[in-house]
Amino acid sequence: MPETSTANALRRPRATSKTAAALPVAATLDNAASPATEIDTSYLETLLGYNARRAALAVIAVFLRRMEPYGLRPVDFSVLSVVAHNPGVTSRQICAALDILPPNLVGMVKSLHKRGLIARKPHPTDRRAQGLHLTAAGRRLHDEAQATATALEHSVTDRISPEELQTLITLLRKVYRS
Image (cartoon, rainbow, N blue to C red; front, side, top):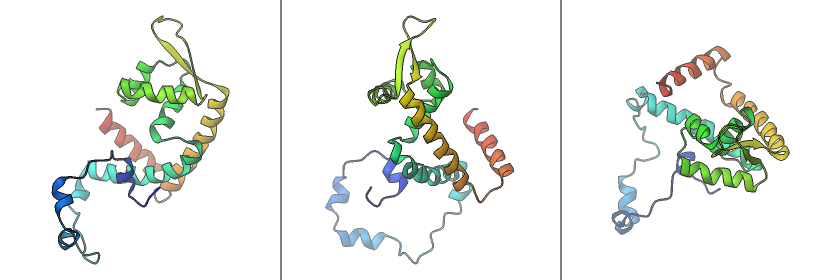
């Protein structure tokens, strides 16, 4: 992966703006803060969203490196985890649980199916739906990836106590579940 921040790696590529492309490099460098200049982020650091995003980016950076051998992005891992812990779950249920738009999930399910990690089976009570199940290969991959995710969580939270971690998780849930 080229040297870029995790935030930029997760962002959709954008077309270069005509204004930025027209500026000479020297003009854009003159406006940049010198590396020795301290940047004041004190206000940003009082905001929940800023702190949550910075923490998420720190965790995601480690996640991306450690999950690369499995070919899993965070959302792929989340979908596999939901299917592993809820055999027969429907796409609609996954969308609701993970706040994923249905058109976005369709491609993920198709990709995971193509990789031989999940199987679609008729839903026992809804003829219009298909239940998703891990295949044997999907179960093996999920089990290895889950062990990796658990280890990486421990490594990125080693500066806080288990009690602080539980408090942090509880408080974050209160924010996103409200």
